[in-house]
Length: 401
Ligand SMILES: [Zn+2]
Ligand SMILES: [Zn+2]
Image 1 (cartoon, rainbow, N blue to C red):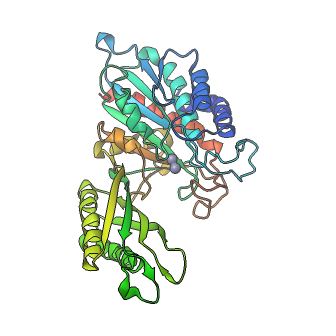
Image 2 (image 1 turned 135 degrees about the vertical axis):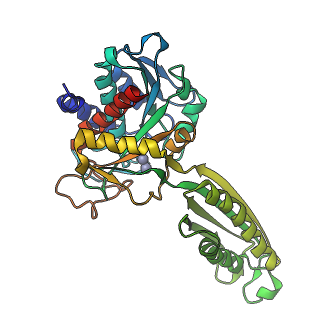
Image 3 (image 1 turned 180 degrees about the vertical axis):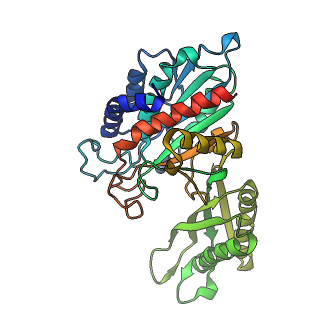
């Protein structure tokens, strides 16, 4: 039976697991209940299952019987498992029962689809010409769980390093339900954090010449950052700098001692990213000095650019067309300005990250609430196809290797 038909047959079980995870969301690196649900879902399958030390990850290895003594090549499939600190307002029958936690980014679907793929591939173990590593990862949302799983050895879980790695991500908006989207090259942005503190000298607001006003200087920095973006970076290798938080002062008639702001910096190439890390602190320091003040800039590296290997992107596009029909696949014209810690895996293993539209049938994807919204809805109808794609990518890639 084709993988897709078998996935349709187990779609009810995949949805049931997804709903159980959705009802009981957990945030960050420690997801003990989600981990238990995954282990229970994998129970009875011919897998080597291990759990993380510093985080509640699950790594499962399926060793195929069709590779002879060599063990054959290895492919890694990744699904993230963590929720967001958001209170759900969807009114769905399986909505979060925990105030302040919601699977608003659809990671519950990824976890259930990956467990479904483990079942589909386990049924084909005898003929599988290699091994599959299933990477169930906590802490995608800001905690760099993927990096931690790499340092705990997920890339060596099957002995040999994977020849390819695949990640899937659902989106509640933008893409029509059931449409897969990917591209070769940059797929998602690098996201770094800039923290600036401007040190002035406080005083009376009526005599600014006797003080050193950090607010006016910090404001100049905010606008200069936008000029930096347009004057120092190639428009075809774009960057985004947004100051999202700005704090200073306590009263209209007092000049404060200091002003501070935070910004996010997004980029799509190593070159632009390292240019930002060099140019931003220099600009901030120079502006402060020009006014006789001092400033500190903390430029903290977040997630790197998620770069799809061009050959793997072609392979994924061909696989989508072969399994679902060409109309179900889209080549994304542009990268997405969000960020992903699957980027840490793709820095070490060639692979591809694929988006999957999960907008409910009948809803306009352009108008639907986005991922991270308290009312974002991801439809169950995509679960079987997501599990199918994971399994087909592994099967077809191992056959190629
Ligand atoms: Zn997210
Ligand atoms: Zn996400």
